Image (tube, rainbow over all chains, first blue to last red; front, side, top):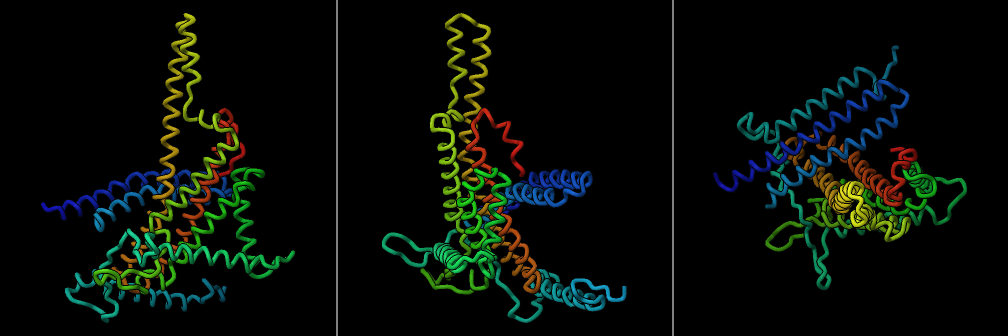
Length: 76
Length: 328
């Protein structure tokens, strides 16, 4: 096991583990938004906009993991 | 029924177009590294073969002015600033009561932003926050959309030390210093608004709240052990909450920075990787995605700034009442 091997392993693990939380979060958000649209179809516009914003917030956490993975792979 | 059209095309035409698109995508995939490993040899013309991407996080230094290094992202940031100033100057040089052309467009942008501010912060505060928020939004969105132009990135370059190619222009948001500068700007304006609205010492009380602990000790000296005990426990909780608020204040700075930097860098890397994997067609679809993400990140940066500003100017005791005003 060389340092290069550990680098690849670390980058893969970092991205994979880091995507679990945001995945769960986006699932919860989308399910809540869909239920809200189902109950009140007229409010589709604002619900959808707010859902997009909050989904982007949750997704940013995965992006942090991606940045760390890129740093491990290409810079460190 | 006869003339039913999808996207302005008749039904057979759209089938033909999508078949052509599919063939191009498959051809692109085959001429990339996937096809190479499937077929065991190079496929397609040689100009379709793209080198494996090597993304760089640090900005390239072009030249020095005195001790100040000038990087390519600095130049693009200044291009953005000059462009914005020019467009605003042209649009509002001779403002008309009934706007036309470019003035109409700029008024649409700023009115939409003002409505967005007011819907979160309320009429009076929304107008006060608007200049800061609109500046952040317009700067970020122009930066990220300019970064998608073909002459940004590796196509124009200068040869630096050790025969290294340094791109002449690079999307400004992919350099961590510029998101950090924006985050610092937004953070300082949040704090200044908070201190001006509720007073310096009152604002500090949000983080260092010793009131209940003090009154608890007062009770202790007076001999009321029972009430002193409760007050001291609640005082300790208050201090702990204050420390948490203080830490989250600084974490906010970090998360502002890394959210913008990470999303924009990930976009650049995604375009590079897709161009490496499938040199045809697919990259264009990713460009559409990146347009949307540039808008979304600008909106999130600006929106979070308004939200934190609104929270900063609300005195601590009234935080529960604020819920009725906020829309987001």
